[in-house]
Length: 164
Image 1 (tube, one colour):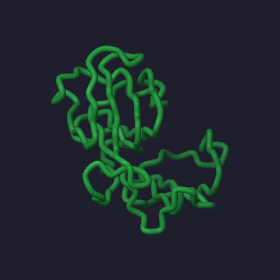
Image 2 (cartoon, one colour):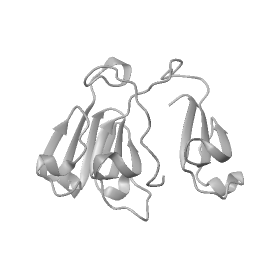
Image 3 (cartoon, one colour):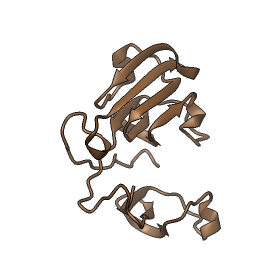
Image 4 (cartoon, helix red, strand yellow):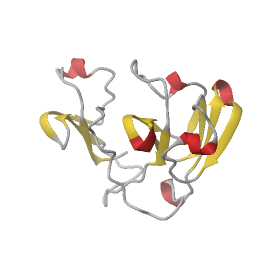
């Protein structure tokens, strides 16, 4: 996503409330493979340096999902972090432009008809910010390459119609 893109709007669901009513919890480590200084989080952190970490080398997501950002104050490229272990930066990022994560926040679902086990999953990708320009709809499909779907443009905004 581009730098001009604002972070997704989120609904406040209560401090630390996670998927299916659980708590959001993530542990970030300064070094790869869960080594070095660590910090456990249950709420957003706009600057990882506030926790006396120079960088994020690995991540363990106990509950989530979380949204990580390459820059402080929730700016720059975004990375969705679902439950699981991320032993090094390239395990959470397919980016060739970014090798850092400097801010992080829980990703809260704001769709009134969101269902974890929804039968249909639909996402719409837009060429420009604010959901404008050329678009492509993806329904219940993994997309390893946008080019395979005839989409040659960049993606600057995303709208999830149903599913997660």
